[in-house]
Length: 345
Image 1: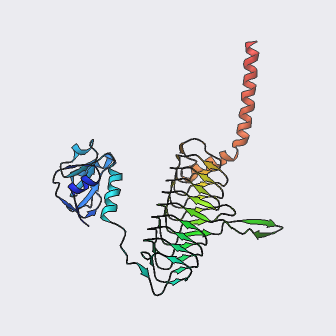
Image 2: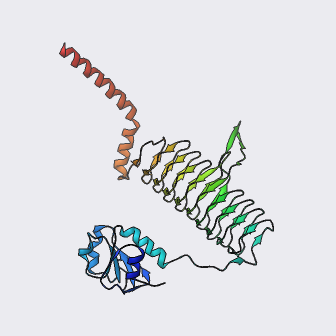
């Protein structure tokens, strides 16, 4: 697809400056862009690159446009505008509806005439596949699953029985939705499995990354709200609830029955303990471990940064004695207070 600067300004409520008829057909960074590419600047540290970029158009703020003499699209939020331009120029691939000859679809399943069932995919009985849905190669749709309209399962995605997927969702390769939660009861030295009879309910416009897993609930359902974005290699345990428009980065995990609010962000490799709650608009930095509920919006961190090994070992020894040091300090403060009171008297 190609588009002119004038058309981009009209679509995205920006101000076009320079050659409004320049034709754009791709996106690129400032360093690699050519005369038919569009790039952007959202961080002022990249402004020096404007002197050498060969981009046909650059997306800038009104404050930064004085640093660039070429054709520009001036908007309030260049990063957001760039994302929308990218979606326009690189839409999801079109497909022809139907069922591949190698797919196995139960006669008791309901598949919309505008949907596609790809090679070697399986759709079990009583599953419902909505209008415009795309089930890519090697996917498994369990019995009584509902897949919403225009949702895409790219490849090798598993949706377990009775799970419900909303409209316009995107699932990357290897995602597993509705596997059993990790539920066992101790029986002496052995473990007895607890059947996981809940479902996974996923809202609209949710994105699930490659090899991310969302476990079904033990009794109640695991619930993922509208607009949630999950990166690759994330673990969501049973009975978790995630509020609308929350985003989680790769290798993070949420233990069972935790409740995450709306518009939260969870950094990469962060861990959320089970049976706790995070309020709306809570932001957890990468590699943090959250062990108790957070009731107020804000940014929270629990990481210890890497240090040279010699320094870390010294600090580790001191941390080992921290409780003893704290008790000694408390006794010292108490004694000092006594001396202060004696001096006053």
